Image (cartoon, rainbow, N blue to C red; front, side, top):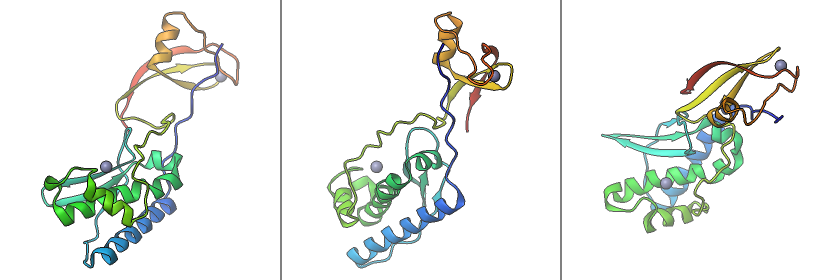
Length: 184
Ligand SMILES: [Zn+2]
Ligand SMILES: [Zn+2]
């Protein structure tokens, strides 16, 4: 008998999103002071899914910063201190040098991170349990009182008869309902 699933992390709320936007603007203001020029305000989206905390994206003339609202929810202060300046530094390095002329995390980018007094060593090696990843298969199970969601690893163990999961609430064994693909 094994204890069950980690609950999924809820994304950050509107107030936390506002904090991220404030931090983005404040960080950009540091770059403006340092380099003595303006950088246009950049759209910030909270639509990133999967294993990355943040992403700076250029498509044609459109530049955006995307943040992962679930990873931010799990590690909020850390992401505010590292992921936000990380992506702003990509944007600023793009404006100053052009992305095609520099390496993504090269000297130019690291210099900007110094201006931000931000840690440039982090690779975002977070424990992502509870973070919905883009294409994850889940298996829905039922007991006497509720539904349960199992990872494919657990489902396979159960199917092979290696384990026997039961519900913590009602104590019943889980029975298989359906396989589903979570794409949130
Ligand atoms: Zn990067
Ligand atoms: Zn139950």
